[in-house]
Amino acid sequence: MSLLLSILVLIVALEHLFIMWLEITVPSPRAARAFNISLEKLQQPEIRTLFANQGLYNGFLAAGLIWSLIWSLFAAPDLARPLQAFFLGCVISAALFGAYTSSKKILWVQGALALQSFLVWLVV
Image (cartoon, rainbow, N blue to C red; front, side, top):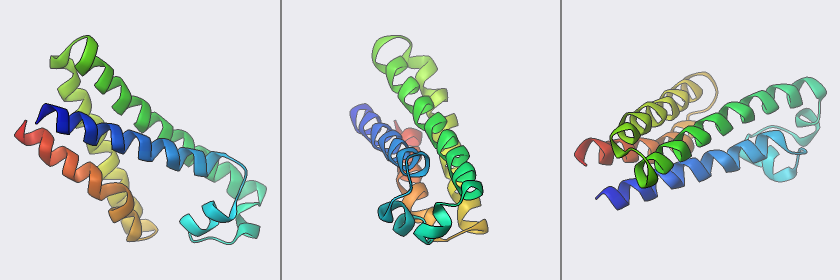
């Protein structure tokens, strides 16, 4: 079960690294589709700044989850558990807020796997 949790946490981290990449890199049709925004609007400097800021936060979430995995595998598994709970909780909170303020899709795209991971965390 611990291996399952590690795999789920890794997938959530990789998902947030991908979201970070979409938000920070040069605007693309793929990013425009993912965020349901026109490519023209996505290319506006003000919007680019906002997306880059969001991307940075998604990168921090991914870094925290990866940090928890490193601790669980190599250093202090007892510290890894609270780190995993904290960062999974942050992802879930961000997904809930995004669903409320922006699009219900965010809850499923960003939040569902994090919630499943957190439920596994509770059982392990």
